[in-house]
Length: 177
Length: 197
Image (cartoon, rainbow over all chains, first blue to last red; front, side):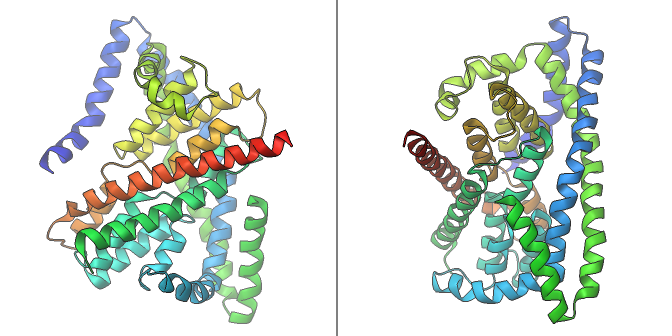
């Protein structure tokens, strides 16, 4: 693992250095290109704001009202019946909806059960092997003004289901209960 | 679909709060949720400006084209709508590579550029194209090779071996990505069958 963390640490600075040297070598106006691209960054960040505000407020309201916990009460027995540990159920449900909420739950599970417990490892694997589908769709479609998402949401959520099932199976096989 | 889910979360939340006596918490959630979203976007500005600036240099120097050419044989099969050596391919590839290295912050601006190029390929339509759906399916399934945030949390809680979940994460990620590609294909064929009828 030493090598992996060294690569992670060096990757960004080396990449930046390489781009700058390559650009200079190709006689590109590097600084002007940088500012030109940077301007686009501001435009994009500002244009995402309404999409994220709309989505995050809806999720916060849903969570704060207690409706999310109430819904979990129904979903939990179903998930348990198919072999999802009760402690993991809320995480499996929230992971595609809210990245920060999922991260909060993951660290909460590790604090309660210990990072090296079955639950702790499973939470870590789920957190690492799936992404926040709602956030990804909101940001990417929002930034380029796509209004009709087609099948994207269905595909994303089904893929999350595959990822979470895979995480449960793999962690059970590798670390045992 | 998104419209319905969005309204559903609000309406159910508000109705639920009436019966549950949590209307105070809901009031607070409206403002903290909005604030959180804006803070997130403001936080994104610094990263977006820096990486899009760097990527503009890379683009002008022709690096994205070289990258695209290198990996094209594999990724082309996933995105049959993107023509050879089109800039969209370069952005899609650099987004995937950034994601693999856990550089989520660097990946987002690249992904947005990829979406812009794909929108141009789709004649600027405001409907999601086939390539966009495939691209986002792969993105939402996560491509991370090294889950840095999770490792950091495990260190925080004094794990004996914080990195021992890298292997299981990698296996689960592979399953979810392959799953995403298969599910995406299935929905694509279902769409095209509908069109033929």
